Length: 66
Length: 315
Ligand SMILES: [Zn+2]
Ligand SMILES: [Zn+2]
Image (cartoon, rainbow over the protein chains, first blue to last red):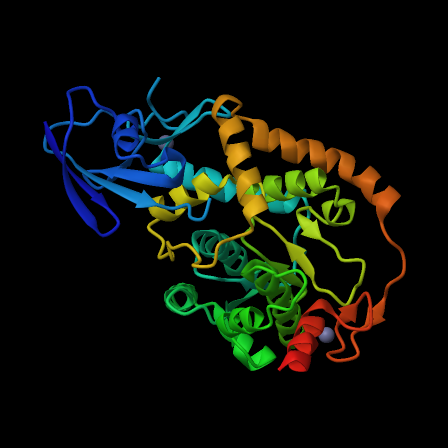
């Protein structure tokens, strides 16, 4: 299934399998999860949250230089 | 299982692995406010009537600290004034200054912007250029060394100018545990015993520094900034940081994955042994005065002035 991912200036469309969590997505994108906050359809979510078809995920980097 | 431990709200934004607590957005924000205020009370960081100078870079840590400290100003417990230091880092600092300004304005906090250039005659960028030219220097320093020394000098000077009784900084739990481990591993006991919620210098001409966010993990401060919809400068300094600090930070992060309480226990253990270390290792004397700027100094010159004189001689 397809989801929209916003990361900084980037706007991506990602193809992901069913039952994919935020954590799985971050791993796929090689983004260390301890450095970001993720919003799913504009609400902050925990990394165990399941992603659904058509979701918009915004990944906000909050920790730098670590 | 997946509802807020405090109010039952099904939409949680954090699972605190160190405590097993789940929190919704509102309860998380409230829990940080309470935790910071209770730490301030517990470690006696402020007294009623203090004038607190907040070192406000515009980054998440200092902006979150400013907002929480402002709640104490609103209750008439303290007077608050913010200072933003413009080190002169092109392409990075400008945005932080604008964001710092906007936050101070929003809260109605008095705000000053002070520049390295005005106090030291050159920006940090220029200092780094000079250093490159003076390759003769036996031990090349990285930007953080200069930045730290000159920032401390300015903060202390501005605190005096403003009549501030405390200087507050945005140091978080990650910063603090890194410092503890770094100094311990390097055997730098002198610096180790200066770590704490309240950095009392051995010289009373230095204004007392306080760290209201010392027990909050960096990740939670980032989450708070987003959850409370604060205007924060999310960017990394273009100068590569202290590489040993980065390595130690990485090591602690890796450990934390399987040992969720490791940062807290490092801090607690250190706070317990610190009084003994301090009693045993505090250096006496050294209450000199820098002949150039009049600030406290161990030798004839304070660190800031010794850098400045060194450049002048090499020009
Ligand atoms: Zn709640
Ligand atoms: Zn001096």
